Image: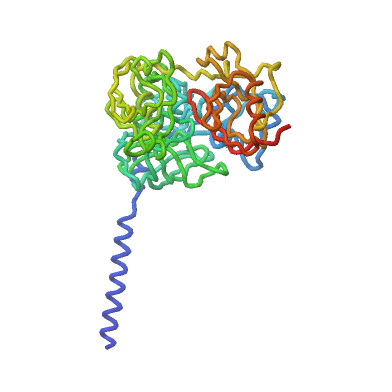
Length: 482
């Protein structure tokens, strides 16, 4: 009996060792990837002349570059043209920011994020062998957050590129970068989702991962297990400014297309057709007789635009563009934006219970019309106290209307802490909808008069123009009448 027990115990030990060895072999080994590709990842630091503001928080134990990177990317940024939190004062000084990048060609071209080098007066690139170079910006595209910079060097180790369309959810991926200035830090995780849409990021189908990404990782590469770059780490979702398990990378095929245009032309040309769209909900699909929720519902068509000339009508649902399905409204800006201006494309639209095919000549999307120099601002004489939504609005000047291509609307100039409406400074309010009645907003007096006539528990919807996008914002309940 003892002999049997001894044999059994020995067998169990051997089986446990075998199972442990199998488990070890099944875990990914990142060492070879890091050895082969780590030298192509660089640390990027920038300097920028700034005027200190008393509103910038001082965080004990953190260097200036960490604070700047944190406040530039990982909390909501002040929009261009908006008044700052306080008057600038104090002497001019040099601030520093940190980011990452990776070498894409042996002759010194490097990819990173546009926000890493935005506004920089000087860019320094440090390699893993401690060599440092000054870099110049070849081009940057804020819409996709891609920048191309170059150093004067040759024979550099360059990364290999993979195909992000072949990535599978659950697949292992690796990031290399400089979080908080710790150079060549390696973190790993899995692909959590693909084709993610983020607010105000209409042109990038983000790769979502659970790879630990922190301030300083911005612009660094995301590798698959074959050592190929499949994305550029760009954003995180965070309530604290640090990693919380949700990281987002720009697919490398998107980045390479942007890089090519920046290197060849110094700018990016994007297509546009001139429609305002919204998501198709299940209720909308049912009411329109569509088989399931899909496509982009056209709210309005810009007069004289490519869509207008092609015969697109408001209430059409665009379900296909240039041979590709439009499953959600966020798909359409990507598909149109990636189409070269001037080219012909076909559109499949759902109209009154039938499918129609339309041909459109794609136009070119201009740079943000609401820029630092022409952001809608309230003429001082038109300012008014906060209304029943807790916001202050003013009227658009004739010049602003012309620049934005609008006939009517009022612009938000202040949002109080207790505001009922989820709007921002600089938003243009176009229409108020209440009980099925659509009213175009033409003046501050008219808008506030409409609000004053509503019940405290009224549910209203505002059509809001933000940058190049239009959306509907629903508000339940107003403050008491003054």
